[in-house]
View 1 (tube, helix red, strand yellow):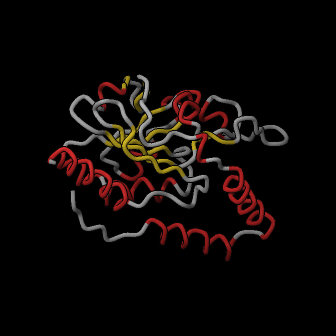
View 2 (spheres, rainbow, N blue to C red):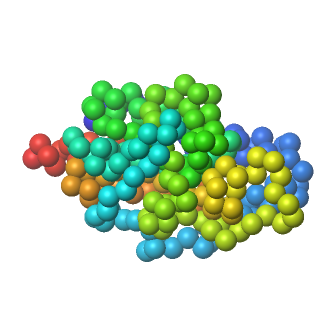
Length: 226
């Protein structure tokens, strides 16, 4: 599967960070950077989902409330899963449209499902990000971060902000009551429910570029052809 990718997601994140450096209060910026650095320092690759793992059945809730199961996703071949934080996440609002432009067309042509997964609840506006950017692929809610926890990719599971949560606090959007979210991750699961590609980033400003995903799918095609 060869497609020409003309954008860099990394460059977009670098521009986002540069804007924050020039516009944010130093204390706010330092807190953001420290949190990202802490997550990177605490990341243990041995504790997260890996290539070769077999994925047990799961069920997600679509943005429209419909059920979406693993069996449905891999019924005819591999599926690509993208984990993101929530609909208002600035980095997610760069990443998902990027994948829509640079990844979805090739997957749609090949008949490979692509789904973006977040603990953000459908009834709390999960679909907002899809409507905002006109995304072509479905969004699904991983209620209570059950799948992210199974894959070992959730973080800040017990962190609750100090003081009273403000209106629209992310804990309300997920219904979890804490600041727990999945780390940015891309998984490719084949028809036999085996993980064939797994890229997990503890830093939410470092995410998988589309060419790496397309290359992984191409390698799968070559093995099948061989």
